[in-house]
Length: 301
Ligand SMILES: [Zn+2]
Image (tube, rainbow, N blue to C red; front, side):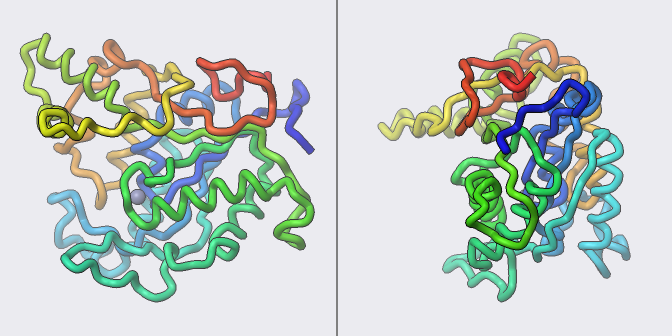
């Protein structure tokens, strides 16, 4: 059952994401690079994104997202998948929304984050058994940032990695398949922001990261050093040639991404010169590996 691809069978990569647009802000260039090199890349999107707010001022007042946000986001997702050259599947859950206010309101009934784990993970287990990925990408325990759907996406990815190969679990939904490696993305790695910030200052340009970095330093001054990363970078994927594709995919999510915003503050060319990688932490491997790695499929080729 453990993955041992024959030379003719392609390697397969499955990325588990909470909402349509997360695949384009976390690991998109990695996925585009692997897809271009012949790897079968599939994104599993847990929720419909129906509770997302419009983040792009140019899309305010547009009738389609106003009437049917989930429908608008399906079209955006299709466009992003085309740009990245990947396939995508919906797991069918309803967006939980990001609770705001003090005290925080209760999550809406029926949403993804309120599902019992076995129910939330079942569609992903089915997909893993059907697609047979060698590698699964997910978020860390904090979901990258603490949106309830991101935390739930993390939990179902870990559950599917652990259980999909076990014939005693999730019976009746496909033949067991055991993926070989599980990674968490480190898209918001402080090392990367620090490097980009330094490069911008050296070029005499304004850094959009000053505030973020100052917040970390301020925490230092008060004696609360920012916590060290729970999961260090083990694996850097060189994918700078696909930064433009990543940016185009992000812009495809027109309701969610401001084309004048944070993600586009530094040109793809400068990012390529400064930090041409996307970073990952290898969490579990069922095959022998040596870190650091430069390939998510190291040990599988
Ligand atoms: Zn999200």
